[in-house]
Length: 277
Image (cartoon, rainbow, N blue to C red; front, side):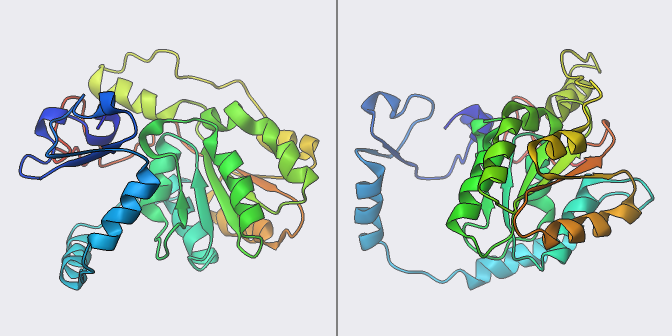
């Protein structure tokens, strides 16, 4: 129940009955009052709970969600600018929605969550609110080894990718055809977005424009490197990457540093108090 997950803890689910499971009793009730504290091994506790829970149908609720999605769709400008939202939509279409998607942390993580339409369990592999930059490439490698028949794509930002890019050597060594979709804006995008929206554009320590040639870096490791700067180049690059059977492929998508993720929850607000644009 940290503010990274539920935002303002005092405004979180005021009408809900809350169950808190933790192996450490000191964690129970530390951030938020709970109705049902359970201390123990989560694997055992969840097994005991699921044995007691009646199976329910959620068709009515799912229909309501579909109705809301139709009424309030995600949107972005339709123009000749290379946008991350468009990139994710094309990845979805060209993989027919069958790929496993891993993510790094930041704007890339949220664009991947919003614009790839997931239809199957365990198709979206992300560290969520833990903020573990560098997670995605390792997760991508593990998912590819575990599911050799699937296409596995790591959606990354250039900031996160720098944290763990040496693992490309591992992917090359094991001949894994993983794809890294690098949304390269030359900044730490999520932090920069917050600095612009909530700190009057006082940017600090978010620019990482060092001229890194990521396709050349991939080639140096023995992977395939592709560069994309225009929307018209997106499909060709993705299709080329999907053809690889025994080499990792990095696609360096050059996107604008001022592209933003919406909706977001501003600091100190409830999770229902969204900024939509």
